[in-house]
Amino acid sequence: MSDNNFKKLGIAPRFHEILSTGLYTGLIPGAPGTYAAFTALLIWYLLYWCLSPLALTIVTLILIVVVTVAGAWTSDVMEHYWGPDPRAVVIDEYVGTWIPCLVAPCTAPNQAWTWWLAFLGFALFRVIDITKPLGCRRVETLVPGGWGVMLDDILAGAYALVIVLGVKWACGVW
Image (cartoon, rainbow, N blue to C red; front, side):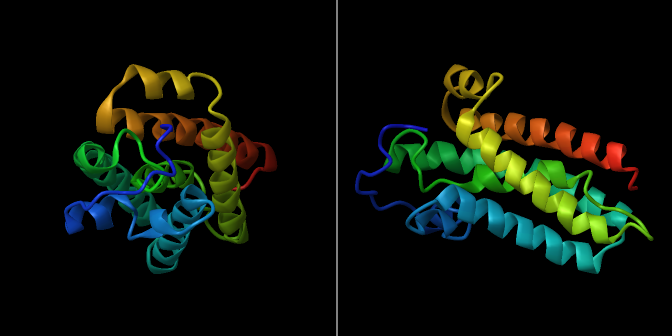
């Protein structure tokens, strides 16, 4: 994250402002990344109620790919207005939250585990994203622009996915 977190934000194109701030969750004072990640979790959970586990996994994967590409693009645009990796740009939190959700869905009789595994993935992603261990900080500095904004959260989400998968396997829930 850049050192411009508390500077006044410039006027930017409305479409990119809405997209990059994750439907304006990035403008909520306090912990905008956590608010955005929780919003992403709620969106995923609503999809869970509408789709079968297989369809949910496919839709989640499509969301990850589409939002990653859109996020890299809009983050690049927003850097021209708000500087490098501003705190308000939180579209990357959506992708990072959805990655561990890929392995969260459980079929009957273990469906009650789905919400707990998804919430665990959300919590792990946030801890990993905030602390930036195991290369997360390095990828953010090595890759400039919008792709750097997205890739550190993708890596943090991948680490959370591995842990959630391990918990799911250890508990024997599928």
